[in-house]
Length: 312
Image 1: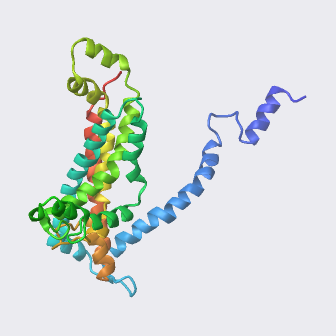
Image 2: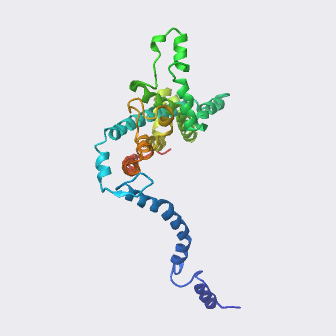
Image 3: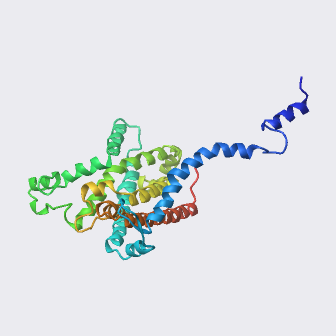
């Protein structure tokens, strides 16, 4: 039977233990990480490096790229439509924070009950989430149609023909319509997130507040909202980053029109890169968008770190 020293020597030779702490573990760990690093390099780092290169060229996606240096970036910061697209997406993000996150929170609070029928209502409000963005955009395009749309049809049926509008064909209402559809699509998603957080709040807090004479509104602002602070911040981050990536609804409902009033960075990138065969310029716009989203996310996270969660 091998002695203790012999077993330790064998373990060292096999890299299973003994000797200095962690001896041989570094190489073993590296062998496990290499496959993941290889995939990461092929599918993330290599495309990123090639994108940075093509962003400095004049390229149509087919022929040989021609080096132009920073000309694409200089053009981007003098492109009025590109600059306006960030104003539009900022307004859109504000709209998503109102129509998606805020309404989702309100619905979660109102439907936070085990009464009969409330589970069905939560399911109905969540149902738009399962639709694809393209399908939702096409559906609501028919609803907002000036001649045959449901909204104008209802207005005419009630004798309010003067209120009928070309909702998606005028700059004053087109972006607002996209915001409303986005809210209809995702408010149920945030409702479920907030509902799950609400179920963790002890009922005893509300019972004590009721005994002290606090009404529903006072309980919401003094108990519910402070305890959901971290959840609100997370949902806000999802809405902000999702807003910058918004494409499907804009593409199917307005395609940036009318008069580029609903043009957002992603739709303008697609038009420049693919519709106009200016792929080099489109990639430069993508690099700018990536930097902007990264900076906004970092600032948002820094703000979230300074906000202390309320324990319960």
